[in-house]
Amino acid sequence: MRLASKMFVISALVIVVLAGVGILSLRSVDRLVSVNREITTRTLPALHLTTSVRESIEPLARLEAQAAALGDVRYRDAWTRRAERVGADLEHLSAYMKSAEEARRRTEAIAQFERYRAVVGDEHARLRRGGRAGAQRLVETDAQLRVEELQESLDGLMAATHARVIATQAEAARLESFTWTQVLGALGAAVVLALIGTAIVAHRMTRSLRRLSSAAAGVASGVFREPLAITSRDEIGALTRSFNAMGSQLRRMEDMRQEFFASVSHEFRSPLTSIRSAAELLRERVPGPLTHKQERLMDIISTSSGRLLLLVNEILEISRLHAGTVRLDRHSLDLAKVVDHAVEELYPRAADA
Image 1: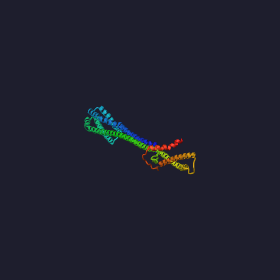
Image 2: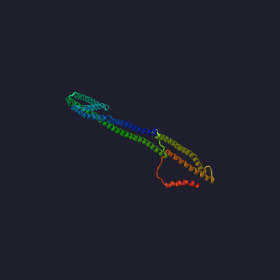
Image 3: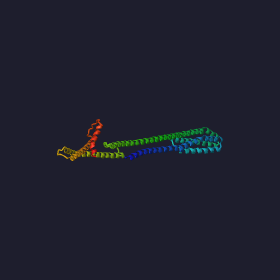
Image 4: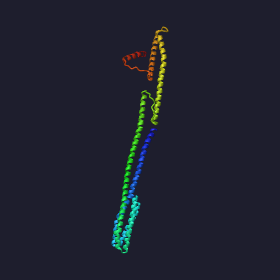
């Protein structure tokens, strides 16, 4: 995998984690909005309406008592209108009921209210017949009992609605805590994933580059090592393959150079030895006497061939040193003697020049 692909994969993983964080956050926020909407559109109106009905019962009971005590039709009509509003509110509560307990309490409250209306209707009928005393007894007995039962049912309905409010608020708090936990956890995971991925890629890159740098320094100093191991298929792996190919080529060229110098030096050494030996024989007058000029020429030939032979021997020694076949004998020496010997060897060349 190439470096660009590795960087893309790491970035894609981080983006996927962040996208997951975003999706979880949006879902949690949507649920939180739904809970708040439920509180504002259903729970609070239900609680408000139930409270309104509960507060209307006592004024309704007072109107009933006044109608029975005074026998005034206006009080009976006022009670009827208020009772119709209470009944309509109880019916309207069905749109806000959500839990089974609320529905049961509402049904119970409607039944208690209908029984109360039936008792009050009996009171009104007795008042129309002139039985005020009987109507007054119903107010103090059955009507009072129905009012207390109705109030108890409405109190239960309010308690159930209030319990739903508390449960909804707890759900909202849980969703808020869950959202924060998920967001912070996912963000931390994304940061850790990005750091780990970047650290791995950087470590692999720097390790490979250090190996290449060390090997390049070895090539620069003339030390050709073994080919580097290729551990990846990215651009650094391609660079390592190219470096290995270059090292192999340089190694072959160095071997060819050393072989060439060794071969040429060896080929030069034999004829130079023959030339020097022939010159020595001529100087010793083995074939016969020489003139003064011929002796001078033989001296030049002998000296020059000796210098060439010395140079060839030095080239051969260097080749053996590179090949590692010469064992070095390291010891201290007198530098003045080395200089004197070098002057003696260089003096004929200087004189010739």
